[in-house]
Image 1 (cartoon, rainbow over the protein chains, first blue to last red):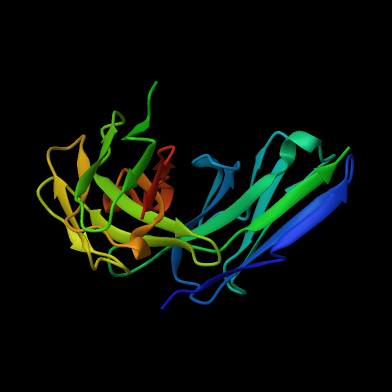
Image 2 (image 1 turned 90 degrees about the horizontal axis):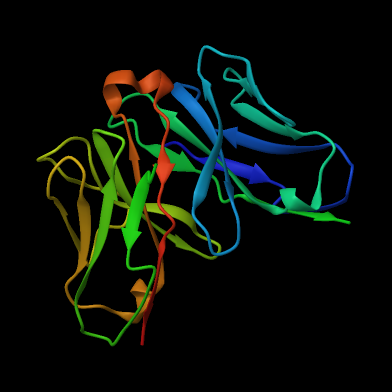
Length: 113
Length: 116
């Protein structure tokens, strides 16, 4: 059974700092990995999708990497801003079965002005 | 571009009452999902529909039923609400397994349900 872990559960940084959020998964047979952002009381917004054949994806100040063999992904946020404060979730789509997404519990990020 | 739309956004029920949560997507996606999100538990899959006319149980299906009304709509029904069903419910959709490598999931804004 696929299990997804995100460490740390919470992170507080000063504005302008570069930071890394971690995601690990137990079954490396995945189709893809997706990073989401969730603001308080809101739904999930897709940030980046990395296919299993890819090593990284970039969108603006965000860069997500994938090391499928070691079961790890990182989300790098450059020059963090208070508006980046949110919970970040990663989810993997595992091969076999119904290819449903399995989620980590998220990292709550606070960027202090 | 509406994406995934859920109704209602908020609901308070008394124990034993029934209700249906509605979800519609306008992206011509094959697969649709219902999740619940609880503090400390993360997102858990309740039911999903891989294509129109099919539904399957997820991780926590007890106390719920679903209907895939057509390709656009997927509803979740609570027949006899219990306080343990107090949660935030999310509907999601994606293109389905035919294009698994680049399948990207999109979520609605959620329904906050309180059962008293």
